[in-house]
Image (tube, rainbow, N blue to C red; front, side, top):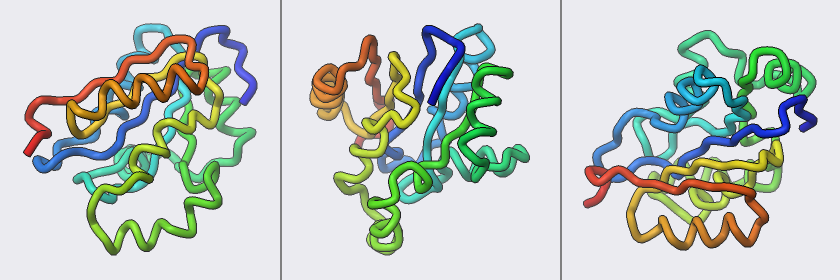
Length: 158
């Protein structure tokens, strides 16, 4: 995605822990954009959490399946856009139904947030357990993230 913003950020999450909390990465995207840093948020529907980014945004009236051209206009104009994961990860789309039927977290919960479809130089990723913070940060470094923050909420642990 081409952005007029030199610095912009991708926010994503792996799905919540056992407590099934609200969707933090979507709320964070609005806070970050409100503070003046452009956000290319990407995400999906809920699988292991109470609500996924797409679910939250649809309730707010956002057309989550907008064309890439519209997403780019939103990012460059409003400083925030949403990229619906199934559009950007066609090979993962095929396993989506299997994931939903399993109802548990899988490696796909980790791969999606790492993908950064807008190629944002900065990333924030929320993970379901503290044991994932360091490996995800290392993966982001290997993938070339200019800056990244990986975090988890303590009450998401079992």
